Image 1 (cartoon, rainbow, N blue to C red):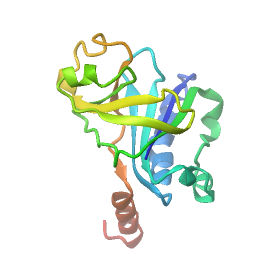
Image 2 (image 1 turned 90 degrees about the vertical axis):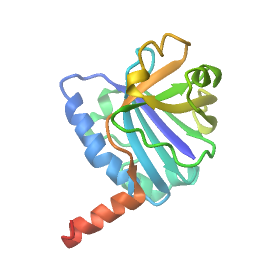
Image 3 (image 1 turned 120 degrees about the horizontal axis):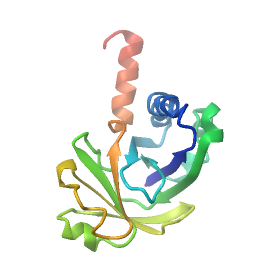
Image 4 (image 1 turned 60 degrees about the horizontal axis):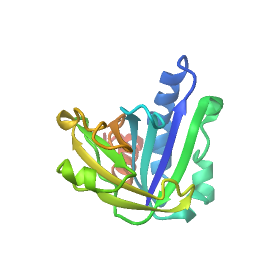
Length: 186
């Protein structure tokens, strides 16, 4: 399933520290939770949506209600919590693992149907909300080369472009890197 967390941040003075915390502490902690398989953070290039987006591939809703998730920081943004605004969480039905979006690519999300993404030559994945806020109820996700982004947002209402803030972390890659750093095999 695809678990998304969207939010904006209201304190420009501490935003860099918050991004460092989220990307380098929180995301690796979450990917170490049993049931998390992939995680990646994004920043919106669109104006009419929350600024930040995290996309996680997880086993299901029970992962988010478990003790390990809560113990490793799920739902907790530490000292930055007071500055987080426009916070939304959704769990979308099974589509497999969310695609990794490289630095030369953008993530495209659309709530207005797949046609506008298909017209752009993209192959959208269909997302159906099954838990948490369930809004928007349907979304389509695709990735595209960054060089093709000019004018995309103006083609259809509800298309949002996101640039990656991190590489996609996967459980196997993170567990291996953690093992190597503990044993000195890095």
